[in-house]
Length: 269
Image 1 (cartoon, rainbow, N blue to C red):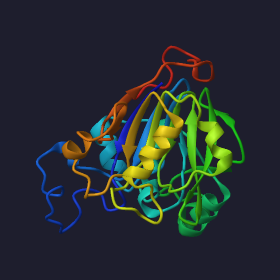
Image 2: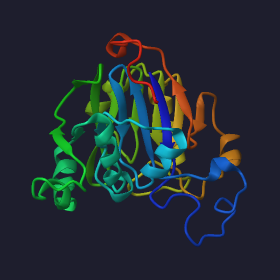
Image 3: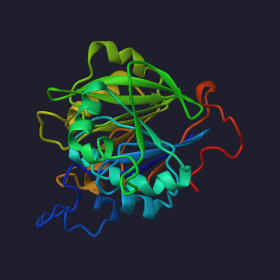
Image 4: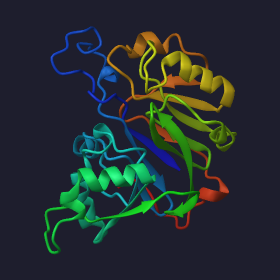
């Protein structure tokens, strides 16, 4: 299994429009962050985690030419507003793209995007998508997907686990029932917005507390704000913890639940 971090930034992206702070004007390419998203290469195809606002630019940068399914963590704009780009991936699949999320997310999708789900039949300019509510673990593209209930302020959101990999963005609390679902991780991608506390995101310190409890093999901190200078903060992180950057590739060992169904399945083309 291979995971590519498509975007590692917060809702505004970095640099922030009109900002002249030291991170927004940094020459370090690691300080340039598109909106948070990732893609997982699985035995049966490419699984997209959220349709970030910058999906078009991310796909072009990474050579992503196929998306076979989408897992939505939640329906906030920065994780949703690239959804129209799925039209081009419909052409690759020659059919609708299955999309998954919790009930709150799907209700918001239908309300925000009526042009997709309520439009008249035969209109060709809208994405062709199917929506399925996530209520428990399920099989998708040759892998077992385990939803991880989280809280993003007062909004119920989902993280996802696939084998030894878990993706937990946009959260500030892990409920008691979710901790056991996160044991024995090889790689954890975790929200860590900034050093200062925030009402809906883990701060850097809070994220490190999560890491200390879960003890994954490797942790990548994502959804980073423009107050996080990559070189400076990276130098202070404990062993096994790093900051995400756009384009970062994470290679994981195949486990039984993600064993390849065919030797050519799931790669980024």
